[in-house]
Image 1 (tube, chains in turn orange, green):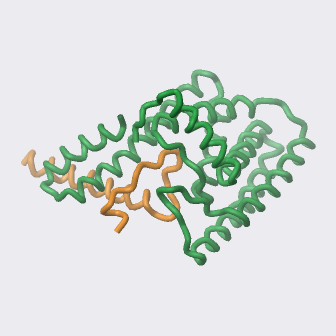
Image 2: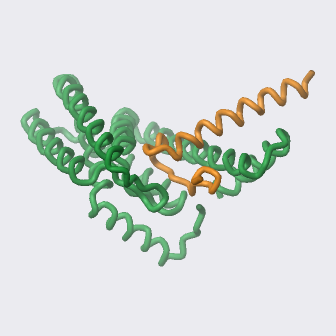
Image 3: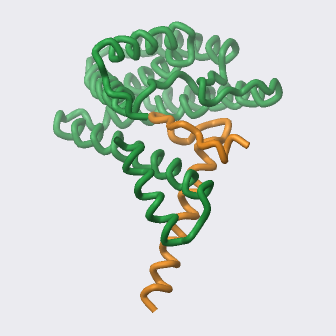
Length: 44
Length: 207
């Protein structure tokens, strides 16, 4: 029960991080002050 | 530093969800953006509150970030340098905005700022970096038009606020001028000088 809940929460976190990463590589960065290196998988 | 923490958290998250290396890279990148932005904004907000310049600093940051989002511009090469520069810039501009200016001076500054912003928009927007360049002509034109549209809306809002609070107007003007400066070639040179100075001082590469 707890493991299922934990996996659900982690999946949502992963989904949000993927969304943030997508915004980070768009033509217009939504995150203005800091610009990290774009990973190779997003450069493709 | 922030890179190592993000990578380690992403590896743990990836391990729990049993995903491939590309997904872990994606999570690490997302975490680096979220953590980096949260750390920088929290430090700026707390120090601005302690110094009693919270409202003007936030108005400066909002305008600065908004026009940087629209127009792009230069970034420093490491997280620590970027954080230090953002902190000094935001707090100093938050303080400068508290200076008293007559309505006439504010109007003159607003007109001059708009002329500068329009010129910068036509000449250099969107300004890219080594990590992100926009070369597509249609996309460049679209971003120029959007910046001009939002600049018009901003002028309207700032003009309405003039009679209400001159400090907020000045903070917003400074935000626009700094974001324009960071789009201009002289802004790139200025940030390059700061980057080189820290390299000579033996600053740690954190990105």
